[in-house]
Amino acid sequence: MTREQILAGLEKAVVAGNKPEAIKEANAALSAGVKALDAIDHGLIKGMTIVGDKYALHELYLPQVLLAADAMYGALDVLLPHIPKEEAKKRVGVVIGVVEGDVHDIGKNLVKTMMTAGGMSVTDLGRDVPIENFVVNVKEKDAHIVAMSTLMTPTMDGMKRAVDGLIESGLRMKVKIIIGGAPTSQEFAEDIGADMWGMNAQDAMNKLKKVI
Amino acid sequence: MAMSHIERAMASITNQPVDRLSVYPIACGVNRKLLSTPTTYSEWCSDPRKFAEAAIAGYKYFDWDWFFGLMDLSVMAADVGSGVRFDEQNTPYVVDPLVKKPEDYEKIQVPDVRKGRCGVIIEGTKLFAERLGKDIITSGFIEGPLLALTQTAGAEKVFMDMYNHRSAVHKALKTFTQFDADFTKAFATTSSPGLCWDYLWGSYSCLGDKEYEEFEAQYARELNKLTSDLGKAFCIHNCADLPHLDTQVKAFKPVIYSMAYYPLIPGSPSPKEAIGKGYADNCLLAGNIDPQAFIRFSTEKIEKVTIDLLQEVKTALCARGLHSRYVVASGCEVPPALATKMENIKMVVDTTKKYGQIECK
Image (tube, rainbow over all chains, first blue to last red; front, top):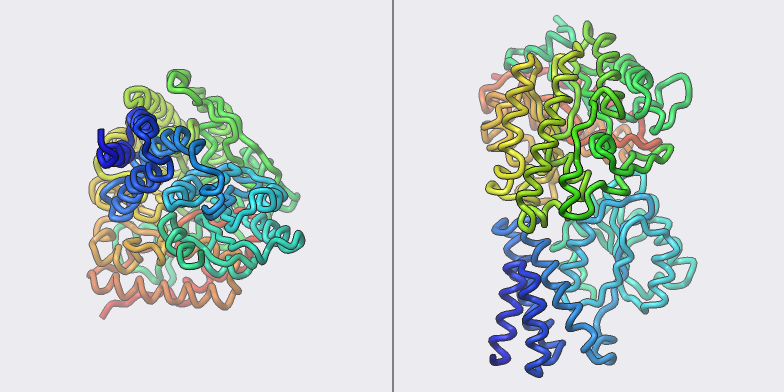
């Protein structure tokens, strides 16, 4: 297979949400000498971008987006270990998580997927994340972006505590902070000292692209 | 002449002229703050007497026109065996879903709805319906099968399994439909005249028409019919951003449809648009004050928001030739957080009383 055929295969597997096929194509890419970074940028990310665009237009829905993301992550597991360290360091680092006291993570996972598809290096802290974990990981991963979400009103204060934690640790000025989740708003983001608010995954990515 | 709450509510359902539009911010858990004995959220949602006493205290304090007995969305998942975390003042939520692997869908069994937290809701609904029934129209509240399943397995897993393990998902949905049927029959033993279904996955942010039909609507129709057959007014609550209005309002034909409005999300239907497109022609719509306003806004600001909503709704109703088919409500539950301002709930009710008169020219 040619390089173009392999890249097209990766793209197609992601758009179809076909994880086994995506993994197969990722291995084929490496075997054929395609650079892992090229396979990601011109295959997987291209496919995920198509899925994201179709989701925004309501041509695809959440199940298909989740399956596409699963396919992309399957292939990334194959490809990421083959990216040279110096190349990996060039990627914008993100620390993302659902704040402490909340386990609703479907929105966070969508944002993570779009960030990954946007070429960022995402550290996913998961859900119900203690505030100090955001601070520790920003430091350890040398992250440039902190993304936090919550679906519940009582846990919104956790976002402010995380922002305060970043201020106290002296890390606030080196990161952009974006928040999201149903009860949050731009006004709330401003109140707690975050830089921006993402209405949804696409909106979050559009806003982040403007500042990085 | 002023109408009674029940006269006003009945007139709104049947689109008759009213002395003013009716109002009910969906305040449930937050009413525990009105109880004379300090009551945590976990106590309120585990004790039918506290659940009912808070409802009664809410009506007495706020004097609204309706009451819907919403608890939280982990009730059915908990009663089939999912692990739920109960914080003192936070809404309980599932932390250990029963379904972790595809074969786990088979493990779901219909529980005895008289026990567990379903039993708390049934008993609590019975108590508040008996006490409030002479004053206002009340409704029980129940999770639809897909919602209950996503709470039991995790939404992300269920959505992916719709394609990867389709038959297992359908089997589980059939089990939850039976669970819901039993739950509905138990609600029918209460004197509450309504039963409100939470069908929140009917959103174009989540499912298209095809998936919605396959994974919820076909089951919902069966339960909607059962609700009506048992003599209950069938209502729907859906706080999603892009609701499936044609299916849920025009095809399902609920008596009341409670919806939310997300002004920043393109396509989210405003009250004016929902009325203008005919969704209130045969259904009493309820909405659309932002639930966060009850925590974050000043009383002056929430008063203005309510006045603006009333003006928008009255103009739209008159343009459509309707008299009263709108309830001033909150789209989603008023946050049951301690930080919620009770004075803001009262302001929405009082402002509707003051400015809710509607006379179309």
